[in-house]
Image (cartoon, rainbow, N blue to C red):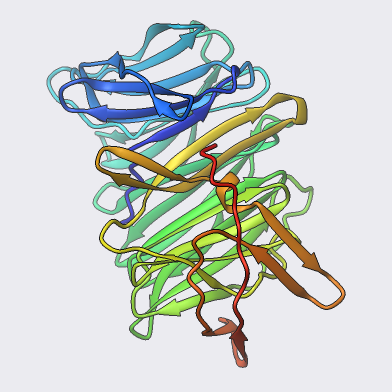
Length: 396
């Protein structure tokens, strides 16, 4: 099972500062602020905590951090100005501490809490949803999904200004399934569960993001002894649910280590790492088709890992909630943020040519098959030509 854990959460706050949240076994959960290109002193948020935590910036531009303390209780930490305030949301039975996978997202008026529980009477594991306007005023809970706890279950979430999508990764009787449920913020209700992908092999990795009313999925699965990178999208918040686009294979190789899906300025990016190379392609039409994949960079010894980036741009009503790539190098962190990726993308629609400029590009020709999974007879082999790349070298 793919267990989504991050070394870092990165949040752009209302003062436009970049905050980095992480965990240390000595300090507990802490954060740092990036000022003049340098990370400042580590400030401890919650010391007696388990390693897993989750961070959001809500629509009031307050930072909310959810964690589980060493007693098992679920704690909400809210950054009010420069001061942290703490509230215990749930108390755990002290005869048995169950690690809880808890996450939060926001809507216009409410904070929403997601967490997993096991029903002791029938050994069913559930993902629960509750929301509140005030911490003392909880609304009734919803059971989003339940599964036999002898199976495996994990989940990830991503949100936009209009919706939040929960991606559920489950294994039942040897079958691996990715499914999703979307929360309609304007209607304050959950859409029905939709199956995204089914496989007999575990997923190597997956990533997704929500752009307005469309969710975009990038999945690394195994097929015929190859790692296959599959893209899908699904439209949400419609009166009539639109069927999934046919699966589009962006890349395949003997080894695809990880993938990231993100968006910026109406450009959708698919990034992945294979054979110590950072590959990528982009879409200017919301996932209808993608540019030819190219190699952006070759790594020597240090391979990028993933972090989670969040920012609420109030004046544009845009909520950014993406995975990104970062590099840990001698305790310093280099960021693969979307500002670094999308500097110049000039698209000639008439000729369907894409001229890109990036820095530190590794030029090479790539041959790749783009094909529809459901119709392999429609294979079309493409010859990928060199792109020209330049980026801003600034760090956010």
